[in-house]
Length: 331
Image 1 (cartoon, rainbow, N blue to C red):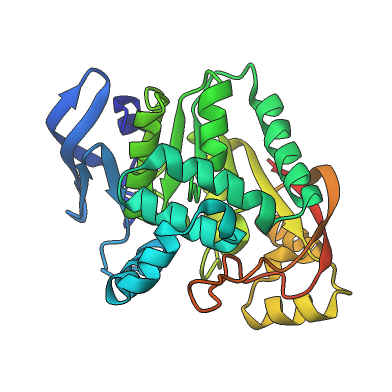
Image 2: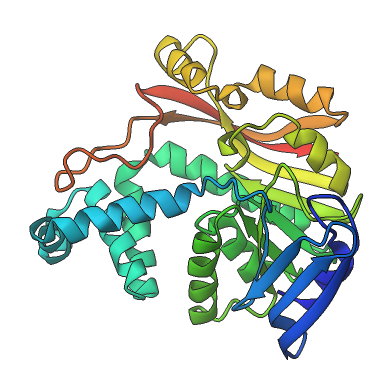
């Protein structure tokens, strides 16, 4: 993580000030170290350049860790399936299996080839309209942030699609955050290999209890991360606390009249996939809100794996539908 972040951070447990012990620094980065809260004495390590500011109560549900572990354990227990996944010519695999192959390559450290296969898989997993609208939202955010000078904090960075675009096309310092240190390390290794790591910091945080000081962030972004944060009660109030500028969230929304998908989403409590509910939640948290760059796209259920016994990439949609894409602009 970059040293400038020290001034923006506080204890996520009690909001106390932090005392820092830098064990290894290089230029303007902290590679190894520890932050200790002066009030509650909670400890937050920096390891291999990634700062971990997760809850100290030990209650963690790292989705990425669980999915990766289950996937890799399954392949280890079924070597014949791994051989089929990895040895079959790519043009003989369906899009889901190409994506799963990319995950294995990524785990083996073959990040560049893994990224190439991910992009190939996307063209078969999603409709052209879906990919066009998604790219349009990314480009809109790049245009909105172009010419700004402050750091950009990205929420729920996941596989790093948006932060990679920002690192390539913006001059701002960028902070990638996610609940999973595992996925952040994976992103960090790829960014180093791609020559994009100079301006990017990596912080493991819980978006519901962030370590950022009040009104310390001028630009907050997220790429499809907002509806997927578990137990989001109080999330938008927490984000309102730390943002003094704009929160730009790439999102898409289902129609309330889409019976099959609406029922499935409601069963999982994912009501921020509906525009009216999302608007109400933002307004209740004292945000001013607009929906910019709206774009409609047909979306279909992603195809199931033919190698991994019907495993799928995305849980939704469960039936073909039309999604309304936009960038939520909140301030």
